[in-house]
Length: 135
Image 1 (tube, rainbow, N blue to C red):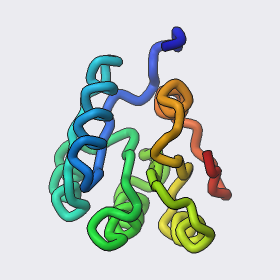
Image 2 (cartoon, rainbow, N blue to C red; image 1 turned 135 degrees about the horizontal axis):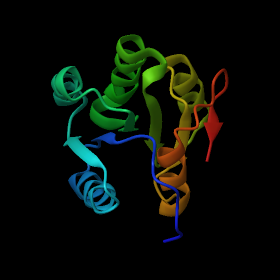
Image 3 (cartoon, rainbow, N blue to C red; image 1 turned 135 degrees about the vertical axis):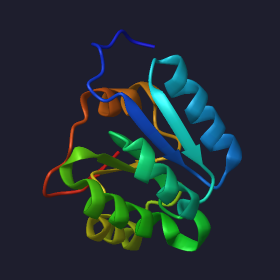
Image 4 (tube, one colour; image 1 turned 30 degrees about the vertical axis):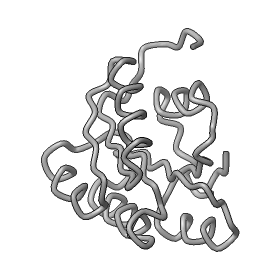
């Protein structure tokens, strides 16, 4: 891992229906000093969001029959610009990209993305503003 400045975001929500993915990311971000909450279903993440108020949400957009997109919309409406939403996908198909834009997702990462790169986005909370960035 490369040395990064102290992160500005401290609370990370991880939502992935693939338990191994969620557990691995949770362990990684906890080891990097973040407060982490995880959910295996987008519906469970809603209750977590109401009390945890994440700075960053890593959301498997295709979780639970595409409910990840609905969770992203909920987060964007509830937290506005206070949350950086990073969509995670194994597909990256054009329709997923368009749905990500519509849901208010800031960045869309392929699940095989480099963890250093993902950590740098989370640490610096680089919102894409008006466009979706595919990484």
